[in-house]
Amino acid sequence: MPEPATGSFPLHLLAPPNPAVLPLPPRTWLGDGVALLRGVVYDIPDGCRPLTLDLWLPENAGGLLPVLVYVHGGAWRTGRRDDLGPRFRDWRPSPFVRLVQAGFAVACLDYRLSGEAVHPAQRDDVAAALAWLRRRAPEIGLDMGRTVLWGESAGGHLAALTALTQPAGTVLGCVTWYAPSNLTVFAEDVPDSSYSAHDGGTFEALMLGGAPAETAGAARDASPVAHVTDQAPPFLLLHGTDDSLVPARQSVRLAEALTAAGCHPDLWLVEGGNHLWVGLSDAEVENCFTRTLQFATACVDAGGR
Image (tube, rainbow, N blue to C red; front, side, top):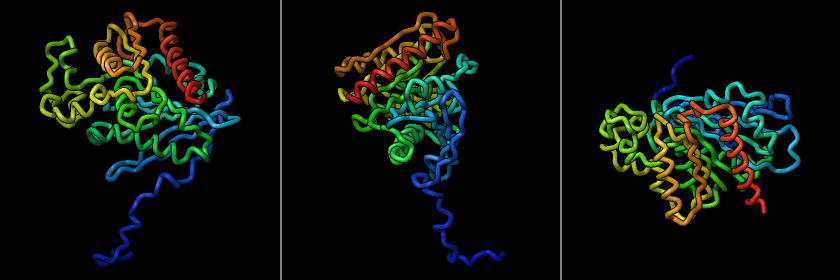
């Protein structure tokens, strides 16, 4: 086939399809009363792969569903959208099935990793996923007026950042597990003296596009504490006291900022817990999950009144 003459090719044909109108994938029936829509395209950023999410839904909803949006961890560098970490991989039924059985629709999303784009791309991707869910809510059966964000580690950071930068009322609550909250002082909280805010190779620096000390504006903008107002939604903050990757002081900082703004965050410091809940008993890990579910349920119940 001959190449089109210069200037004659209709460039609009190269434009990606609009995820807002793409057909939804077929539902996969998983048993236990749960269906899965896997790999739904919610956004196609310029120059990037299509971004996808999974939707976990009950087979028979009986009404519009509250939504729990999960953002995975992985130091903004890696991770899977359907993974809560190694302590949950052997759960049967899986954590997401349990959430659906408790009455939620669950959306687990991909976002651009730091090897693909730098801040604010990751925050923008979570916001784009929320916008896509709002657009498609009627056909899926979602009540986006009852939405809770939840993330672990880097995903908890993105959940908090999104909850605090979206218009008030976008989400009814936010849960973070062992998440960074203030990148401008992160190095101060790390007990390892070799960790430096001037190091351009840390996970934080790779996400920011430079060492936090050299990208002060970006570091502040990427810090949830910088966006706290009295309009913040309710927060549940869980963090292990022995976290060797993200110091518990980071969750304390966010709780303090929320409290100073007149909010009433629920901060739970889990004694002996390391990152990814390493060091906790199975019962203690179960308790972290149960507290999260109870908090999310209370948020959407209050929002439905």
